[in-house]
Picture: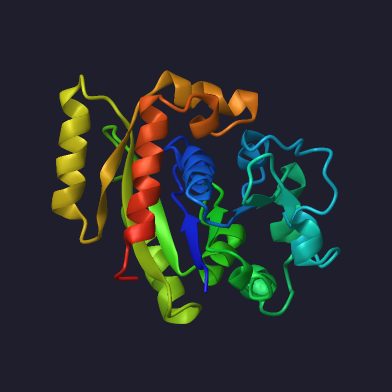
Length: 255
């Protein structure tokens, strides 16, 4: 059975989409069959994997509204073994359209149940807010991976996210676990990055990945070319870091 990992943090700009794109590409690189589900209306994961988000029929919005099947919504990328269910700005209206629909928290889960055994990993990129799209991702997932930016306000909002995860565990998905925390945008030249890492380790009772993603110009450039970092610049420190993270994720035996 494939592992379903939701990448979530209600703060924007923490490297969530960067992690979704590059972790999935690095898993595919080591011969894992991966499906990425873009649940963010900005659609940056979709375009970061080389798809034209506004020109694709049968995306996650159509899937949620029952206008296509999940197999119809899965699109191949240029990367072997990596497929994506794309997103675009239409998804922003899904929350309103789901009002009054019975069991709306389970719409994505009910669809993913049909196909998750076809994949080694299903990676869900959540929107930067705790809304019904994020709840759908959490009811579908086995685990939550939380990227945290190495900056002063890193812990702000994290307690709210953990509270939401606990509520989902109690009421909607008792199987849900914390995959762990991954630090992003680490700048070895600043004391602040080091302090943030220590602060989180001391205050958070959860798994913290050994791999730390550096602040890296090549990582920032890659999405504009529609390529993950391991293809855009295979030898960059960003590519090496995401390869290490992928290996850590594969090796997690306690979930």
